[in-house]
Image (cartoon, rainbow, N blue to C red; front, side, top):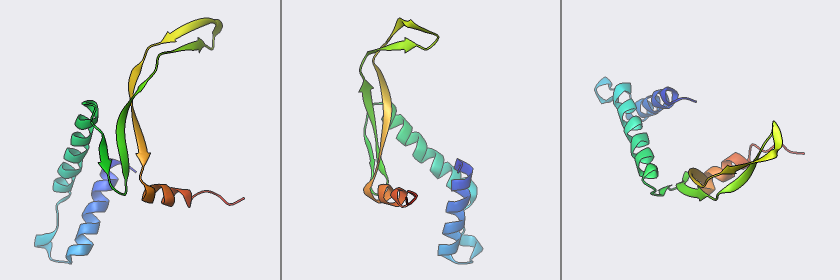
Length: 107
């Protein structure tokens, strides 16, 4: 699913909720601006080291990976130092986690 797919789906869902009055329809361009602004705000906050908690969805947070020694697969005798770095972690919320678990194939 792409950002465009999300915009189209939101626009269609709002159209269903609001009825068939054309004056009340939310233009897809407006929905795109709202979705993009939401994503920009989340990205900016995470880039500043803030934790973003969206109830029933999940939590975005910055974690610092420790420095470690890696191996070059083409020359395993050579150690490669990997410096510490910041990474974004996502922890799904309870509702999302439960819905995804339903996809687990039964043995």
